[in-house]
Structure formats: C-alpha cells, structure tokens
Length: 276
Image 1: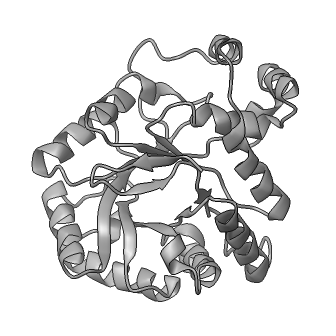
Image 2 (image 1 turned 90 degrees about the horizontal axis):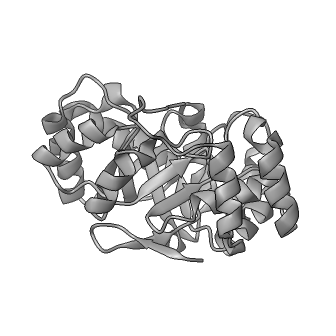
C-alpha cells in the first residue's frame, strides 16, 4: 500500500478505512470488527472514527478490531466541537481512549469548527500531546481561510479531513493548493459519494467497465490520484472491504481523468466548503 507522509514525518497508508454508521446495529459488532481486521490485513491500516459515530459505538467496534494489533494501525478519531474546550477535551479524549481500549490516539481531530477559539482548542490538544494521550492532532471540515487562521496560531496541524469526490471537488480551487503548499495531506471522506448517484453516473460506469472494476473503485482510485490525499471509504462487509482495497491498484489514464473532468468539472471559482 502506498504511503503518505504527514508534516511531522509520520507515514500512513494512502487508503484507509472509515467507520461512519458502524456500531449502530446495521451489522453485529463482531462482523464489523472482522471487516476492519480484514482491511488491516489488506494494507488499509489507517482507521478513522469519531466520538460522534454511533455516540461512541464505532469507537468500540474499532477497539475490538485492533485488539492485539495496535502497533499495525494508525488510529484517527474526532472530538465534537462542543467538547473541544480546555476541560472538555481532556474528558472527551479519555472517553475515546476507553472505548478504543488504547493508551494513545495517533491523530486526534477537531470534527468541525465550534465556539471555542483556535487558541483554546490547540492548547487543549497540545496538553494531550504532552501527556502522551495523542501523538498528533488535526482538523476536519475546515476551509482554506480557516486553515490560514489556524496556521497563524500553530503550525502543528498534520491533516484536514474533508468531503472530496468527483461530485464535490470545490476544495481543488484553494484548500488543496494551500495544504499542498504546507506539505499537509488531506483525508478524503465519502470518496464514493452519498446515496449512489455518483456511482450510477454514465461516465463512472464507462470508466469502470474499461478497467474491469466497479464505479466505487473508480471513485476511490480518482481520489488517490493526488499524492497528498488519504482516502477513507467506509468499511462495510468483507466483500466491500476487499473491493475498496483493490481500488488502490487501479491506475486511471489521462483519457479516464479527462472523461471524469468533463462530467464533473473542476472548480473555476471559490465555492463554500461542502460537508456532510
């Protein structure tokens, strides 16, 4: 599996596993943990979760999945903005650590901007890092102007996790260039879109047919075409995980990329940051 380097020098898998909607009863927690373990075996060793997902249920599934395999995994979780105060961050992190059954989180993200100023959020994150509770911190759902403001307070942010797929590529206008200029990868969530519309698009199906692949695999391969992008499609069942992993080997041609550009035009101006 190709690696992506974070600003602190850490290398992580370019293709990881998302856990939104895990721990909510759609499958048994044992089945979900087994799927995550398979993903680890297939090289998708970065696992992203959040205290919001299933109100801690997804973190519990991840904790079960990585038991005995902690050293093989890059563990990412996210804090609710309303918890991201000096006092609240410590308590929220401790709850996540208990659910994950670990002593330290690799990358701790602010899930989206809240009322607390960056100075307070960063101070809370740095206290956790000094205490050995987290190794690094980052953000999620922050636009380019937000990143400029954040960087004026601290340059220790290692990633920004944002919505990115052919239907939502507004970040290519200014956010991706800013992150690339600061050697900061983004994490692309929902790389295959939501609701299936992207995967039903004629162009995605045509490109998939040329590669003997699925439209979902083409969408994942598209997100991975940039060296500074970490893609985190959701880990579903076993077949879904195998399909995700195989997408890492797909090399899209210039003709493929041109067809996708024609169907989903790159941004020619600034757009509001898309979020789910």
